[in-house]
Image 1 (cartoon, rainbow, N blue to C red):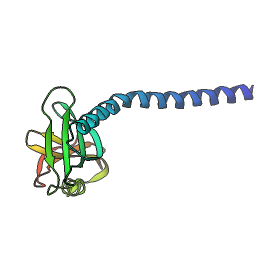
Image 2 (image 1 turned 60 degrees about the vertical axis):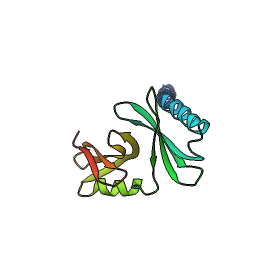
Image 3 (image 1 turned 135 degrees about the vertical axis):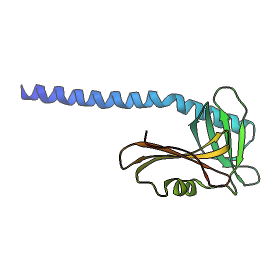
Image 4 (image 1 turned 120 degrees about the vertical axis):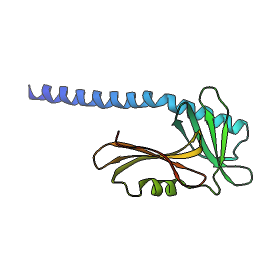
Length: 158
């Protein structure tokens, strides 16, 4: 009887882990597909010579931020809308870096864990979105303007 219980418990544990992996893979698939399409578009249009990274950024509309270097070796970002809209560009050579934006955003904040730092296009131009959880376990977003490193907007204690 003990062997049956051990077998059933092991089988159910294995099944639960397998289902979690499948759910995570299937749940992330739409983001991966959109990122791949945006990278292919940027490569086809020769906006960037080399691509470093790409990720989905959500504001009023979804877009994919593709960061890399152009033919002249300057670091740039291309913002490709997921649905309809115009492609936008940002020169990152003299802009605030991700680490600088994170340092500015988190100054004087009680940070428990930084969730992400993403570059996106907003009405004010290119912004760094720094998301973090504070010591009270509340979600916070701070937006830093990429061109000059000043904070644009803060959404705190969600």
